Image 1 (cartoon, rainbow, N blue to C red):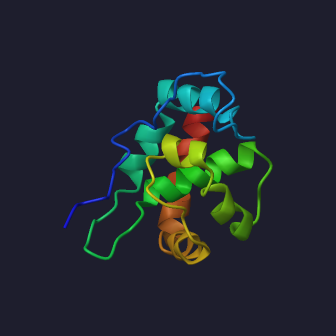
Image 2 (cartoon, helix red, strand yellow):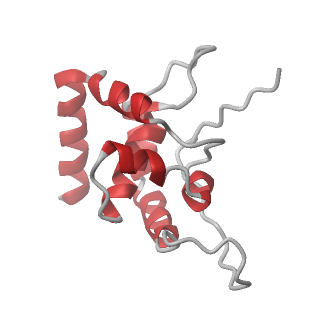
Length: 131
């Protein structure tokens, strides 16, 4: 069986611009945001702070979900159901190296896992980035 799990490995993908009119998406403004997040090391920091233990049933990494939430907030999306449909967009899946959209259950389960310790880690990361 082919392994379809793709790790972010510290960076999200940045796509080349194309103005051919094919596969136009309303989230194309995320490409510069992904580039900025890579340069600032945000993706790498989230990947190292929240490592994913890959098992046979693991479909999405914690970093995939947290970064999709961060990117969706730049687009004004704040509901889990809308984040789930947002990750189904071709550009978003390409940027996050996803084979399919993240479902609502995976997002809510991932947000419940880290607990207070994970919240503290994320808060310290955000404070160091904003400092």
